[in-house]
Image (cartoon, rainbow, N blue to C red; front, side):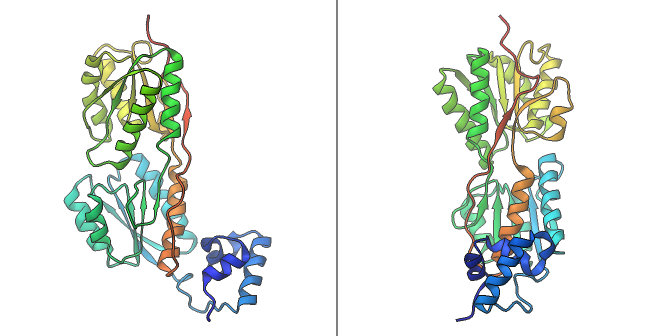
Length: 321
């Protein structure tokens, strides 16, 4: 029986992606690891030749909104990882439009594979559109499609614990876009954590994942009477802060604000934003490795959620007495 890359990886005690690098990008591996993979390949009689594991590939990257810095960070990591193997990426911007996303998935099927970043379409439709094209989903779980998700439990729970310790008894959650898998999970985590700490929760209506969306949520947040707001993402949090200030509510003196993502701007504004740091770049790097392995014909599975962590800065404080 002809040895496969998975056989080499198993014998060498490394991942399939690492085994693939030994033949396509050997300079990226430590000498000991490289030697172990090559020795395993030799023992098994593995022949690379023009192996699909090392061929140059072209794959699509479908993003909800390229203007969102989260997806800019994700795309940079994806393209950086693809560049190591001189693979090509075709970027699609769905612009939070389901019709565009649908058409773009159909177009990406003509390529070697695709990365679906936070797709908004219903699960069954995504599965039908993807078909047999090698695909990996980032930041959403879809049955039967390998995925990489960022933790929606630990960091958001830490945020509620932090606000509870400061003395907040009424918190609002500023929701993100309709159809966002991450928004639904974050909202659920916040609700369960608030119940655990005996905190009243007000869930605000869905808004765009943008500064403008945060501004739109400012008046409802102020009217709710909540002394703290956890926002769907950092952009919504920054928009909330600006909108609340226009309404005469200062952060954190009058209301505390917590974001999610930890984009670069979060630490540069005043007050610096307390937020949940998400491993955005890491998820993009791993997604490329999974996709290339799938394109090579190897079986791949979803990875465990990547850790999130609360970063406390100046936008949270004890509620005004």
